[in-house]
Length: 370
Image (cartoon, rainbow, N blue to C red; front, side, top):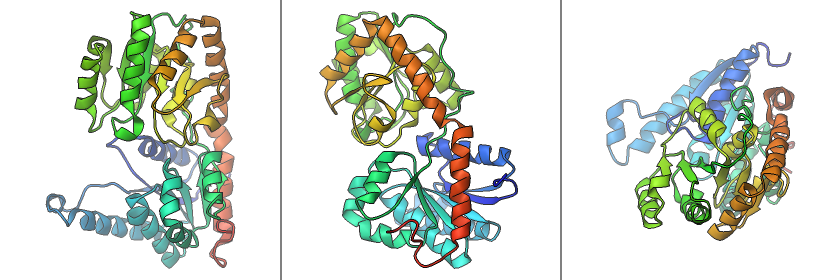
């Protein structure tokens, strides 16, 4: 097997926070190790060393960057290939760019796994710098066809390697009708994810379905504001802010849910949507970014415009009021997510690693940049 004995440096974040990219990084490390690969995880969001440096404004970023570069340089000396979890903004400049440069200096191919939902805006403002960095990459892989299209607009070729869903953990909920109307939102409490619209939609649902309740699973700077909004809407007693949940608790929550909401204003391939589908819980999501690539409107879920609480509420009620349709969506979602299981994703990842190693540093990595 191609992964057996391969020495892989995995560059990416680790919790906290327990976001999608951090959890995908940890899950990938475990799966690769189980296949016989030798995995080193260089944590891209590690705290400052020494700790006191993190308390000095202006030196915090410098201290983290120096520690990261040192850890990465050491790891590269024991690596056949680098798998880089990359994102937009400062993550690109402080993590991706140094990784690509150090990979070139040490002669280790870097497979860039770009995952940012805001890629379009980021590339529009700095595609020249990204293209320059990508000339040092062996391969560019992305989780969805959405990002393939985004990078193609900027003359960069990407290949799809989907997110991996743990179908042993996220299993279909016990059969029952959706009568309890337990809704779940599993996004960070940040403005980008527009949890306020989910709360406003829930208030409309509760007016028509008094037994409805909502669990908000996530942490972030907007928690106090969202709690105040729930009180203002008169639904505070029916809304539970559960905070950030570990994977096992998140899987258990989905098994108790009837529907999940994804109110995000920008997205790529949200794990929470796939995990909900794997749990047999239909999704009502905004139609943004890569979501329409994983949720087929009218078959595996319902898509609504950004910021439209009325449309989101109507979509929820349409499923609650039609149990047979709800069951069809649940079954279709379970079937759809099978293609995100490790046995389906593994050969794609093997090909990316093998191609990256075979490409070496010929020219400007023409397989990535056109």
